[in-house]
Length: 89
Image (cartoon, rainbow, N blue to C red):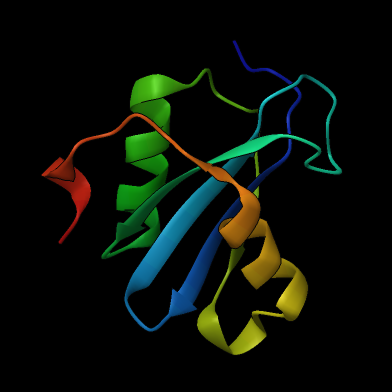
């Protein structure tokens, strides 16, 4: 089962992926959000998030060439998730 929450997987720098997920259901403005990463791949960032969060119900991958200041600010202001180093590199 999935929750209806916003989720982005963002490559801030080449090979540095973060998964950001909204805390509240139906929050696509990311009023409160949690980040997982950095990880070497988008798949590892999503796997790290899924160890601690319910399936948000889909999301969007943003590659480094597509990253905007909005994406950078989203990663910066998200609280750090409870995850270990198993996904790091």
